[in-house]
Image (tube, rainbow, N blue to C red):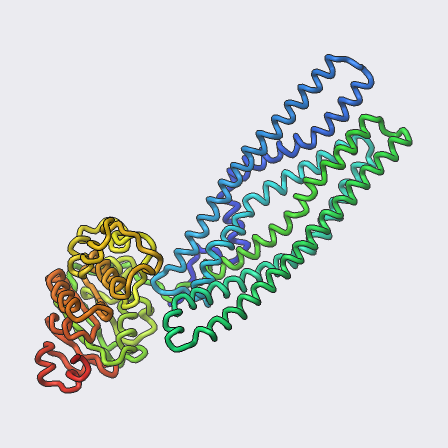
Amino acid sequence: MTTPDPQRPRRGADILRTALRRNTGAMTRGTVLMGLYQAGETAFPIALGLIVEHSLQERSLGSLGLSIGALAVIITTVSLSWRFGMRVLQEANTTEAHRWRVQVAACGLQPVARDVDLKSGEVLTIATEDADQTADIIEVVPLLISSLVAVLVAAIALGLADIRLGLLVIVGTVAILSVLSVMSKRIGAGTQEQQARVARAGAKVADLITGLRPLHGFGGNHAAFASYRKVSTDAKHQAITVAKVNGVYAGTALALNAVLAAAVTLTAGWLAFDRQITIGELVMAVGLAQFIMEPLKLFSEMPKYVMMARASAERMALVLSAPPVTVPGTERPAAGGDLEIDCVRYGSLRKLKFQVAAGEFVAIAAYQPRSAADFASILAVNIPPHAYEGAVRVSGRELSDLAIEAVREHMLVNPYDAEIFAGTLRTNIDPSGTSRMVREAVEASMLTDVVALHREGLDHSVRDRGANLSGGQRQRLSLARALAADTEVLVLHDPTTAVDAVTEQLIARNIAKMRRGRTTVVITSSPAVLDAADRVLVLDDGVITAEDTHRNLLATDEAYCVAVAR
């Protein structure tokens, strides 16, 4: 079921073409304004040469005043065209980078992972640095064209004075770009490798942060830090290599531009000494020789930025062109909340089969944690339906036929390690701001003491990953979020492992009360939650081995009693 999405770009070149195509208007306006800026810059030494020429001939105050006015117009044009041109281009650049960030993030947040071998830290780097560098093409092309305009205007103006000066500028520009285009390819390859190594280092950091506490627990933090040090050192060395190449490139470009400017100046001086050009033309030539160093510098840097944008676009294509592991259906669950697991075989699960009626509260006592995790992953659609045998039916329809968004609206699977986000208690409980069950969810999850502890109440700030909350508070906050969603089917995985026995008892009763009439499945070994359920299913060795109420199982099943009694 891995079919490519024909709407998604396939290669880095496609991504760059897409960025250019949807910013044509902004780039056209930016190119015109930046071309006007460069033309104005070029016109300044030309006008200065003409002023000198006419001033020597006419020696008139009126001509001098007119010349000063012309220079003022040129300077004003240069100032305004640069300001508004860069404003247009930078706005388009920022907007385009944001579009690509959103698109990469959307792929990274797919409920079923896309078929690409990248970790979250690498995807983050692609969504930030690579998106920014790819969007730079929006500025690169107009600046490239405007720089070309400046060089051509300068070449024409010098050619009108003497054809040899114009040809010198054109031939020198072609030679400089030929040399630098070869060097820019190495920069592009080096930048792509640098981004890949930085991304791997970022992924390693994300893994370390996630697993820092358990790493400290068994003394593996030193080995983990050593592993990160190696990855980050590789990234540093590659960054230094790229910086060296960039330095050589910039130095070479500057040196070649200076040689061309010096050649134009010396040639113009020789022609003036030989009386083949006038003093005014000499002033113009010297001014243009100094001026063209800026557009030549900008022009010579553009191949480097093009290659960097191409390298970043190729990395974005790794995510954007990767096909989803499975193509979800398009149907929606029917009304009702019944759940059927029909002979599911996956991982540690072996022919798992049971049903939960609409409105029933069922607890599953899983003797092996792996079985519980596999079962929760299947219901959360983290495992594509084609990856396991059997079928999962929600309200009578198979999971594989349902749209992912529709499943999420109908059935919520809350993992035992649910993330807590930076924000407030309220935004963690009700991220969309649309729930009407926030107060009830806070009370049912026994989060009331946390809310009452702070003067801001639900608006109390929460740090990233709930760093300023205890383990029990984070777990209750996650439970409150799940209850506030008020979905037709709610699946909870170990929702009370970090709370004390008294709080656990109260939470179990509150869940049963709040979810009355709604389908609820809780994977747990908590006696309090098991006792509150209408029915308990025993999941042992991948199959359901027993089914009854908690108290009947305690009385008749010794293995169950040993597994859940505390």
